[in-house]
Each structure stands twice: as C-alpha cells, then as structure tokens.
Image 1: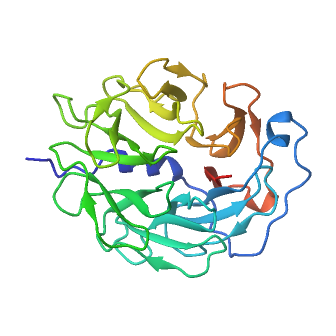
Image 2: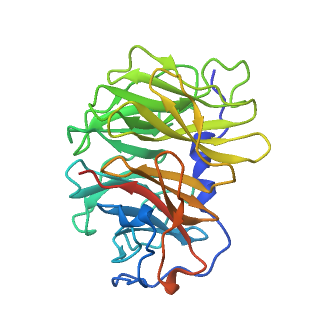
Length: 318
C-alpha cells in the first residue's frame, strides 16, 4: 500500500519559494534595460513563460528571452506555476491553488494574454501539466485517487481523464516527446525504499513500454524538464543527496548522460524553439545558455523585479 507521505516530485516547487518582498501589484508591461549583447541571448527567439513571485504568491509572466516586454498574465494572490504553452503558443496550461487548499492544486488553462481562464480539474492535487504536440491532450500528475501519485492524460478542454501509470510507486513531472508518441516522467519505481530516489523513465503515450533512462544517486532525484526539439535528448534537473543541483542531458535510449552545469542551479527551464539554447535559473534568476552548456548569460530584468524569484519556465514552440 502506498505511503501518505507528500509526493516528493511536487516538492520541486519548493525550489521556487523563498522569503522575498511582497508580491507585485500588477499587470502593466515591464520594460527592462537594453538586452545583453551576448550571442546567447541575441540568438534567442520566441516567448518565455516566467514564474515570478515571493512567499506563497507567484504569478505567470510572458515576455521575451531578453527580459523585455514582461506582462503578468495570471495576476492572482495565489500560487500559479508550471506553465506550458500550447503547440500554437496561443494558450497556457498551468497549475494553481487559487480555488482550493493552500497546499493543493488543480489544472487551469487560459489564453496567452491571461483571458478566458478555465479550470480543467477538480482534484485538489494536480500539477505539472504538459501539452501534447497535437494540442488535443494534456498530461499531468495527481494523487486524487489514492495516497500515491500517478500520471494522467485528459482532453485539452478537460474530461476523459485516463490514469496511465497506476502502479505502487509515485510517478510525476510528465513531458511529451515532440512527436507525441512518448512521455518522459520521474518515478521512484524499482527503488526498495519508497521516496529514496527518483529516476527518469519513458513510456509510450498510452502508458505501455516503460523503460528507465537515468539512475539518480540515493537520496537524490532526477526531474525531466524539456525534450529537445529533434526528439533525441531530454534535459533534466538532478538534485543530489548533498544538496547539489545541476542540469544534465540524456539521450532517449538512456545513453550519453552529460552534465551541462557545474554549480548549483535553482531550476531548469526549457529548450528554445530553434533548439540552440536552454533556459534555466541560478540564484533564482533566469539564464540562457547554449544547448552544450556554454556561454550562460543572465537574462536582464527590470528593477521592479528585484527581490523576486524569477524562473524561465517554458519556451513557446515555433
């Protein structure tokens, strides 16, 4: 029988929390100073969904990779996180506790400008949504059926929820492959002691053909964060038992594990639409580096965000 201990994967959101200033009052567009001249940022295209906040009040912002044009699109007094752009970049799916328990969450969707907000689940324990490349399905994690967590898929408009994992383990943080045929996720399955470590697995989109890609050190965890645009690699976040945190790449067959950073990072973000860069956070500030780990540059931010945690979470698709 599964333990009632809180899902360890959901604890990744604790990385976004901290004792910062009071939340921003809102919604106007924020304009940063001139963008850095570094090639890393100059080469960046598309839009980034940022998670910005302090304490237990986090909002979703959408803006440019150079830190300009930031707009608060969720503007609530709650904890909004986990944004994922729809394939056409017109909508964002995310999780929030805005209509539930302080420590719970459900899946919501809205237009990229923050309008037309809709609630998709009513579980009180749903988070980490990921939009299928077809635009027709959304994968997410939830523990609403029993004490453990599983990975579910539902229609993009809500409904027709299917449990894909339903085993005696905790499974979470699903991300779709670019062709929509596979889902990567994090799990403690195969570990003799539940929650002792979390590894990355890949399964077919119907939940079959599960296979392990990584093996986290005991007491640590691996979280898949973004699939490369060509579908050949997965960027993931590894937290070690000593508190060390870094970004790695792994091939989809489990080979070629490569460490990209050699100092503690706050969290991983996403691959750029052109596949050249990866966004991540260090010291709770957003950075962009090339996909081989070189030339990391801080994204310049407007002064009004000083004292806030700012995480570059997802990058719009081409």
